[in-house]
Image 1: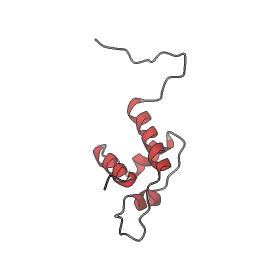
Image 2 (image 1 turned 180 degrees about the horizontal axis):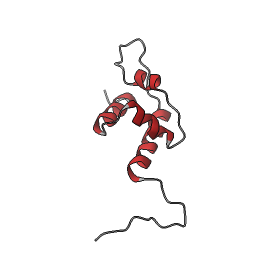
Image 3 (image 1 turned 60 degrees about the vertical axis):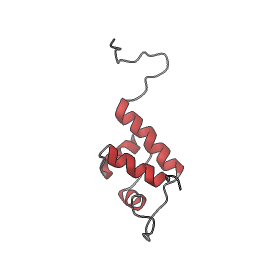
Length: 87
């Protein structure tokens, strides 16, 4: 069986050493609101009664927010990036 969205979310959380507050802020970068209780339900084991399956929308918004968190916002069209290339 392959990885579920919950598995991917958990692995990214651990790999980037993110806490619930960090994840909430990252989701806010793309105007997506998620509560601590929702996150708690996503990170529970599958056999827990309050377990919630991570949908594609939640994971997609988190990944988009994570890109902004790590790289910064995309420059607007027509603007050049402020990052200078080094050779």
